[in-house]
Length: 330
Image 1: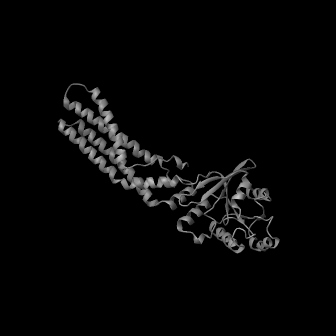
Image 2: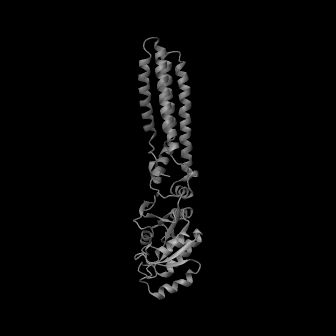
Image 3: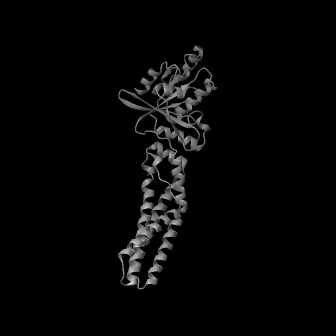
């Protein structure tokens, strides 16, 4: 889903102004076609064509809002969870309903007053019906002002969703800051990662791709999401982190045994256990910086890592990375 193409949602006055201008153009065309003859007939034709043009323009714009917006319930689970944790989902659904209601009201008023103007008994009645139509359709649109504003706020949020390929097998890299996650991503993919923002944090996802046995895989580094204990997250951060569960086929958890990251082994192991409990996915552990780590520090980790496949790597020097990549792909 390309959320960047979502069109801006405007105020009721914006849509009314465009529709009224369209009505004026069509009325001018109708005047040229109805020359001479009975004045009542001319007014009835011109004003009914004006009403029809306004109604059609409003329908095009209002129905376009609904068609342009993604159907949240049909989104891939990853994006559906992001919508639910970054917007007021119930209010969003009510807003969709409000716009649909306004569209139907505009269509109903157009048919009603088109007929009334066409069957008017005098010129004054025709103009009066036109005025009534404008009043009622304006009122209907202004009643959904809050809904339009809600949809526009949601659109702005969705435009900041990370652009990930939900149809690809995906590896998610987790671990504390400065343990070498992004370096490992670069080593695995052989290129600079793409950067994608989450809508509620200054932190960004790092996304890379590589091919194994003819199949393309997606690798995502998750700064700001899986780099501290999940129990310390607020509701939105936790839900966004758990949204990754619907995307990840496997998690690579990176541990730095050297202490140079600023986090000791015990802190890192607790984070690993928390992610394992929450996600319930296959986790492969990459003990990074193994080329400079003390042997005793690495060996002391192993009894705590028995339940996981473990690889000693150096992402910086590209040592052991190929074996790790092959394992997670298999």
